[in-house]
Image 1 (cartoon, helix red, strand yellow):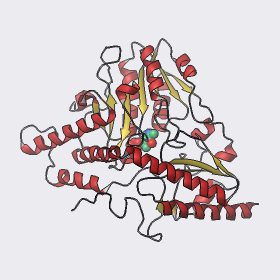
Image 2 (cartoon, helix red, strand yellow; image 1 turned 45 degrees about the vertical axis):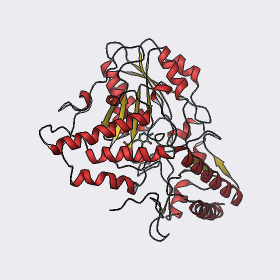
Image 3 (tube, protein in one colour; image 1 turned 60 degrees about the horizontal axis):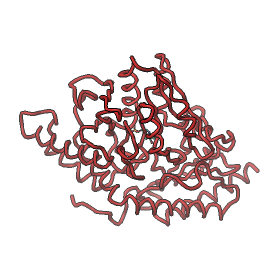
Image 4 (cartoon, helix red, strand yellow; image 1 turned 30 degrees about the vertical axis):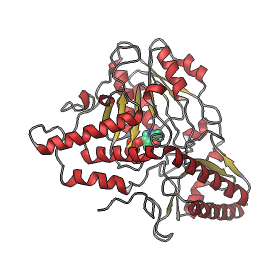
Length: 406
Ligand SMILES: *Cc1c(COP(=O)(O)O)cnc(C)c1O
């Protein structure tokens, strides 16, 4: 197989409209870049050894590949030491390990966690599960742009607070957290700072040292890598100098410095590192391109129809993210009308009754407005003509829905 560096047809771009819907849901997941597939292939077929096998070449080669990937990923996060990277199955597991692991290890010293109402369910539901075990959780609110008030955050930290968990970039509205400022507050109070960076990795600059992050969760499949692998960055020593302890949530062979047992998925780890290398190679250029495409999409929609409202931040947003409400056009009906567009509302839907998004509710939006919200996730495969097409199709269907309900 030949590598196809940035080939004619980018990953995720349909060959024709009849073949597959136009993919505009890159917050949910991303296609695997062909160059990532190429990097992984030998580790399925040839160097398939167990990285923990130390008695033969198969094992050595697998281990060497894992350690190269670990170094690369540690570098990408600005980590001081590759040993601070703990491989997991994805960001959900990393969030669970970070929060449960810190709370369990710190049980003698504290029993309180501070987080934000707009976090991913992997954080919010983990906190709720801990609450049932007697842990106290403070969920801070946000303003209309999705930002937490830093004075309120500082005030929420108590004597018995173990951890503050604030996501780097919101998966629905693209709000970006001031990581450095939060990191500073946490350091002053000697409280650990965890961030869920699943959406941020490969889209905005991350640097755990400069930003004062103690624990960071991320996932390969959000950054054009494979599904089923992620990592938790765990600072070796707290910024106060004491050892940072995280209690394992999976017990077994003692892999990953005892923090996460289980045979390492070598091909996925190799692909993860390659995917992040590719994303960082053109982080700024791609971010600019994605921002321009989002602006164009919004502009086209606003030109075509009235009643288009932006949800979330005006300016400083995750590249590729746009969240819009279309007055008088329920999102579920609109998506049903557009099977040629792969889009989402961004909220977790139960099959019986779609719940309005907890993120949009936290912004103070009415339920009516939340129910008309569509999340656009523009990505590497998206081109100008895709955005033009999507805007035209949506404008057409919004008008159709409005006249039907009008
Ligand atoms: C996708 C996502 C997750 C879950 O990641 P998985 O690797 O799919 O478990 C967690 N947090 C955020 C912010 C996400 O976008």
